[in-house]
Length: 226
Image 1 (cartoon, one colour):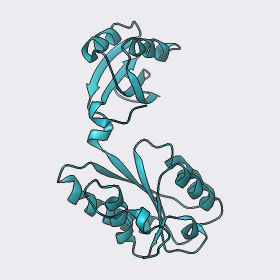
Image 2 (cartoon, rainbow, N blue to C red; image 1 turned 30 degrees about the vertical axis):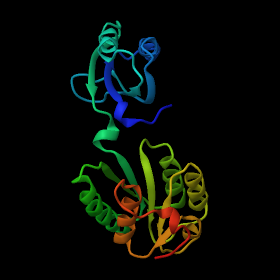
Image 3 (cartoon, rainbow, N blue to C red; image 1 turned 90 degrees about the horizontal axis):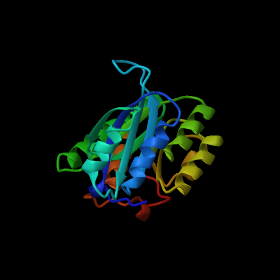
């Protein structure tokens, strides 16, 4: 799949909730050589379309975008087709922060403040947080980061993390997503790419690494502690 976000399109399709809808939509898109990069399907839980299905797709390499949208609208089960800019142009790269509430809030403060400096100059960096407790909950959340669209870096913010969380960190790093950990008890800091004592600075480092204009590169300081 191509990763050129400048040639990306996005569609939101509301359809009847029945079997075969995804097949019909995908058939039309394949006819136009639309290369699907991301797909998300769910059942609408509120509003005038409650109970209907929502399909969100991002794609590129389409032969004729306008004609394809018209043909999709003619599919019998399709109720509405709307075009949007892709998420990569709106929310951009994502910083994911997982851990204890107080530490997560401090890391988020640093990340949001740093992201603001870059976004005001045209970048798109968003910050996602989830405060969690418990080894199993943390491990499941960390593992899920590798499946999140546009997740670019993970910050683990807590006082004690190890065991299955450390093994999940290894899997996330193997998927190509760098991990910053706060200095904490437990084995997680030994598995992270970078360990940072100050949570605000950890958030700043995370944004600087994924920014297109910053000069900080986590690969040059991997294994260090700040």
